[in-house]
Length: 302
Image (cartoon, rainbow, N blue to C red; front, side, top):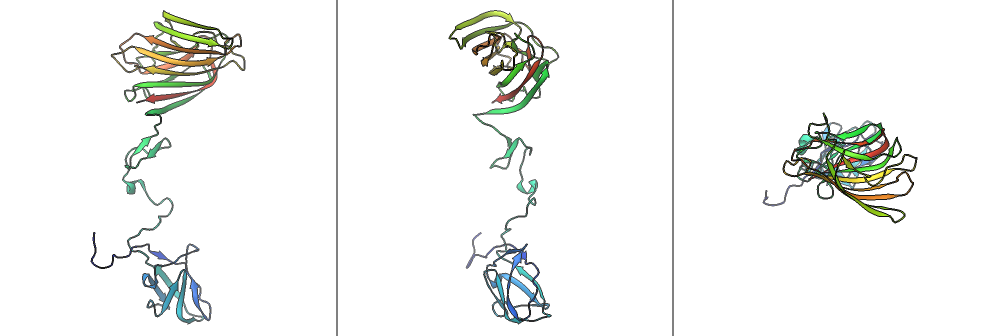
């Protein structure tokens, strides 16, 4: 809104801390919460001395955070209050924990995994063009781990699992994923075909492919995983078409692992399961024994 003449000054209402009168002293320091404050001018203040409001400019003046009365005060005088008007429309700095969510008119769910956007909506953290962390699972002697229909929904088109430092309880095992259309009541245990290229530290290379009727999407299809303290597996696998009724279910993975001969081996590969049924649950397991330890991070990609 425009004004004719000078625009009204705006500011912050504050009541100064109590001031003890010193006999024969006219100048006093004004503080709020033990911090010096400086009014806009004497005209932005209400000052009461001995129950009488004082006239700004003649009964008192201000310079910075110092108020000086027109004459020295004496024992028995009482400075009742000093109210600083400041800029009367300025709210100033709110006290800690005083601005509620309702004052922001924000929408969405406030939590440790969301942030407040510029349009006053809470949103999940998103990086890499829609890659969102949905869950983190720490493995501890588990027969398998799974991610269910609360995570695998039509919200995401693609899913990704990152397997970190997986250790097997048994020696000479294969780690693989299986899919389910009934949220884990049963899993598909056969019919997975593969195409894999592998390389080990000796320079040996090879491929494995075909409709081999495997029991799952293998992470280490080119060799069995060992179980000594330093024979582990790290892998990243992407699941395509899990929720689609128009396409087959396929994966692409990159795995670095230590087979039982102690060499380092790398698998690059793709698996496919031929089905137009929407899936809503996946699990990772070992061909023998438990998954001893490790971490799996599960992501959705929009």
